Length: 241
Image (cartoon, rainbow, N blue to C red; front, side, top):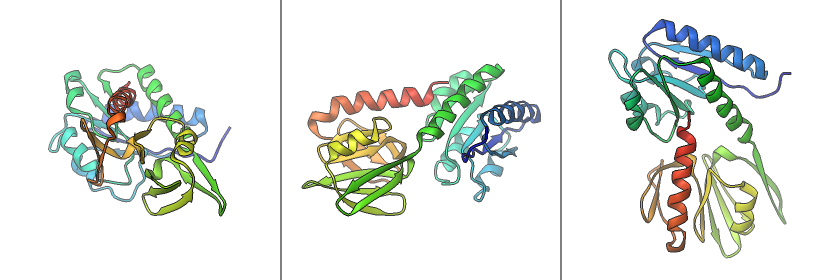
């Protein structure tokens, strides 16, 4: 049964045989789910970093390519708003330790079984479904926000400000009510006055959180142990493949 969701895939690998196999697996999976989709092929890191128009929900990125390698390419892709997620594909499993970035969702070792791609796509499909809208209501009415667009939420004297990619919205609501409504990871309370979306976090230190836009927020003393534990849980979940 078809639905309104769509999911576009990019494959960046300098070996044509991997393009064909990944494309066939992804096409079959997305057709079964009734997802509208496009599959785009790129044959070098230089190709993908020049692509600034196509919306790519998931990029399969080879680690070793002629010219610009996958790990170097990742650093540029992380600055590209049109590419949402990366899964590395490599015949060198040890490269997994260097592959993590805030867009990295998994690591597949060549040669791979079709089942490993299906399992990964299942997880990505669930993430797409989970990225729904959340509604906040106060005396002035209701506002809906796509979860992935929320960067962080700040509380001040019984009011909150929701900071998104494009706007700020001031609402009468407690941070605890927000926390309950958002439903856990990737949203994480780091302070009595802040909830951050880990999708927009670059790094977590012992007492600070650094966002992708380079803003830095202090972790409340009573939250530090829990923040570290939950952040590690989030990283494990994101790299599980």
